[in-house]
Length: 313
Image (cartoon, rainbow, N blue to C red; front, side, top):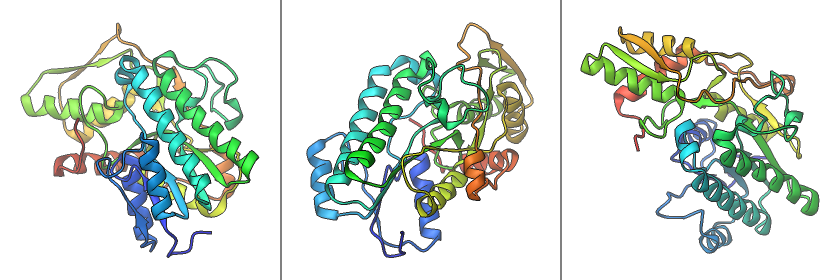
């Protein structure tokens, strides 16, 4: 399916997932990658996306471009999250069909599942009850992306697959204080507290919600695996199959960073979904499992942070 000379377009190649995909593809010997920065190609523009696909004619597409953020950003800017993600998905998926793309992989998110879905969350939990309100706009956009892929497969016979990763982290993450996800935010806040000698760090919520975390290079490996071994409209969860509380995560981050201060919890701040653990039995049945455990991934991520291999905006 994916010959080493295939023209492969990675949408969002500078982001956390996109950059990991590029690393993985290059390591596997794929040398014909098509990459565009946002200044070179605005995926929100239908005319620009159409002109790009007609000129480049990619054979394989990894759709990793998305507007992402943590609980605060999702709750504060829902219109931005739903609009930008909807329009990017619609433009790229539609032009992939128009221009004969052989296969497309759409990156969704575990937040597509209901807030109180049975744990671990199996793929068939989608649309069975209400979403988590704080990131509903983003989740609805991602669900629309799944339905776009499935609808084009049904009507036009395309081979557009959808992958639902759990919470991701790693080199290339966003460590900004206002709009980052929980793990990079913890690294940034404890690093800053260590640097300034702050006696304590106050964190959002109660620390009791449970989350699963996957090192982003493991996700990239799973995406390549699925591109070569999975077809059709069945969505596929990608995760580790294990979770921990946010409090336990904070303690692990504190150890990696070397911060010796106290951790306080602001219970007036929202916790979000009580638990988000993916059922990854289907993916395990196909023969793929993650290879990077959390402690090692945290060490690599903090090393990347210290070396300047981070985004902060």
